[in-house]
Image 1 (cartoon, rainbow, N blue to C red):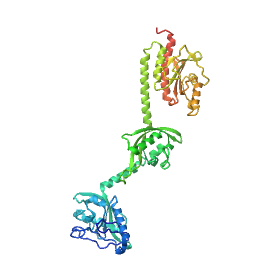
Image 2: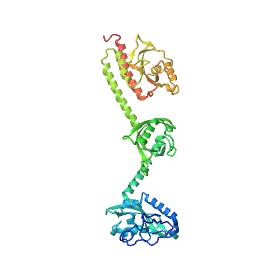
Image 3: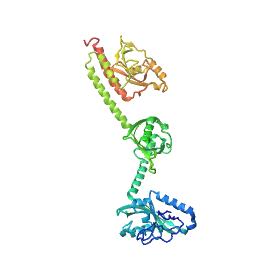
Image 4: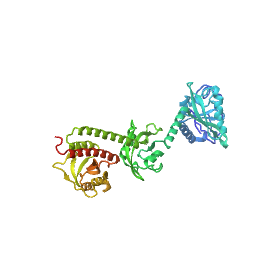
Length: 495
C-alpha cells in the first residue's frame, strides 16, 4: 500500500500482507533507538525474506518513489497504531521528516496535542472496522508548534485472509482542499447553463467543451460542436476570432474584453451577431514549465445593445446634420441652392450619390445630382434640366405612383459577387455604375407631387433599411419646401 522513507530499508505494505511487530511502540526518544542513530524502518512485509532478491527491493523503491511524488500527504499505521509510512508532502505540511515520524506510536505529543490525541487516534483507527473511506477534519501540530487544520481520508488495509492489517490516511490542508473544491465547483457551474457562453478550445483552436449558452449562440448542440473548426460555424469574422485565440495561446490573455462582429450560418439563414469576449490561457498545473492546454473563451451576445447604441449614434449624427443644414440654407438667397446645400449635408454618412428629378408636366427631368464617377457635391445640372428616360417599373416612377418611398438592391436581381451584373443593373436604371442599393422617395409640398429624390449606395455598403427611409423622407420634405419656394418666387426673385 505504501512505503516508508528511511536511510535503511524501504518496506511495502500490500493488501494481502500481515504486519510484523512494530519497531517502536513507546513513542519516546528518537527513531532507530535511544541513541537516535539511523532511521527506523518498521517491517510490514512478513513474506519478504532474505531471498526476495533485488526484484523486491526494486518494487519497494518504486513504490516509495510513487508515494513521495504524490500531491497529497500520506501516512500509514499498522494494527497497533504505529506510524509505518510518511511521504514528502506530509513532511512539507507538518515539518516532521520521515525519519522523525516513522516508528512513533500514534500522533500524541508530536503531531497532535496530548489532550486531543486519544480522540484523533480513535477516529483514525476506527477505519479498520469499517469498509470504504472515512473523512474527518483534525487540527494537527507542525514541528514549529503551530497548528494546521487538515482534512483526512482514511481506509483500512487488509492483510492475509482479508483481515485488517492497518490504516492508511491521506490528508491535506483544509484551505487547500476548499480552494480545490471551489475551483471544481466554479468550473462545473461555468459549464452549466449560465448567462454567458463558455468555450474551451484546444491548441488547434477547436472546441473541446461548450456550455449550453455557447451552444445556442453557435447554433448547434453541446456535443455536435466539439472538434469542429470554427470556420464551419462562423461565416464572417472567424479570422479575427481565431487570431485572438492564437494570440492568447502565444502571449497570454489581453487586458480588456474585445468585441467581435460575426456572421453565423444557421438553419434559418445567416445571422450577424456581436460577441463581447474575454479570454484565458489554460496551462497544465502538473508541469514545472507552463504547457498550454488551450484557451478559455467566455462571451456574451451584446448584439441588441450594440445595435441600439449604433442607432442612437446614427440618429444623433443625422439630427446634427439636419440642424447644420437648416442654419446653412437659411443664409441661401436662391431656394435651389438651399436645396442642393441641404442634400450635401444629408449625404454625409448616408449615401454615395443623390439624384434630384423634378416633374415638368408628365415628365421627370434631372435637375441636380452628384458626380457619377467620383465623390462630390450635389450641383444643379449645367445648361438646364434633362429629361430622364426611366423605363416602366423604375423605382423613381414607382415612388411617384405610390406617393411614397421605394427601396431596392442589385442583389435582388443579380448574383452576389457579380460586379458586371451589378453595373448592368445600375446602367439599366440610368444610375452610376457603382450603384448597388437605391432609395427613392417622392417630393411633396402643398398637396402636390414635385418630383422624386433618389439616394444611391455602392456595393460595399449595406442596403437601405426602414430607419433610412424615415431619414430620407425628412430630407425630401425639406427639399420639397425649397423647390416649391423656388417655383413660387420664380427666377431672380432673390435679386
